Image 1 (cartoon, rainbow, N blue to C red):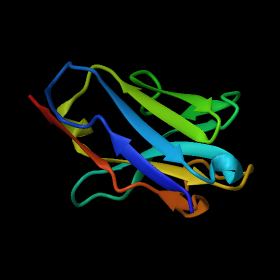
Image 2 (image 1 turned 180 degrees about the horizontal axis):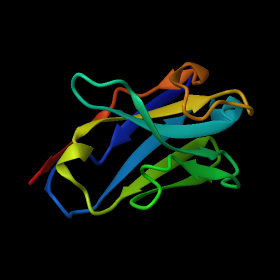
Image 3 (image 1 turned 90 degrees about the vertical axis):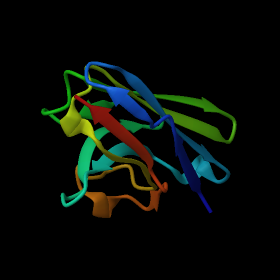
Image 4 (image 1 turned 120 degrees about the vertical axis):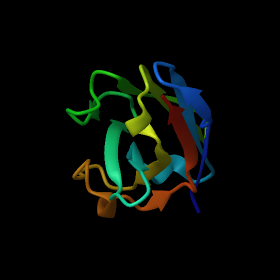
Length: 127
């Protein structure tokens, strides 16, 4: 069973940067793509960025492309996916989730295409 564990979320000031990390261990061999989503209170879960396990092929939503980027590192059975966030704004306040899919072909922005989810890490941005 794949387990995804996020970390790095905390309270920051507007303009700050954060690196969020997602570690997937055990049985990661069936993971083909990884992604970051976020969900603010009262809003739908929103896709931010996604990446293939090889690192070749990484995508971010148009709305986030300038300030967010995704990267991946792999070491045997351990996979770490990072989300770098820059120039954070109060509207970036949300729970940030890591997701993984065993399918190579996914609709990147569709949460239904992901098989595995972490519990999330909270990012709070103050003005």
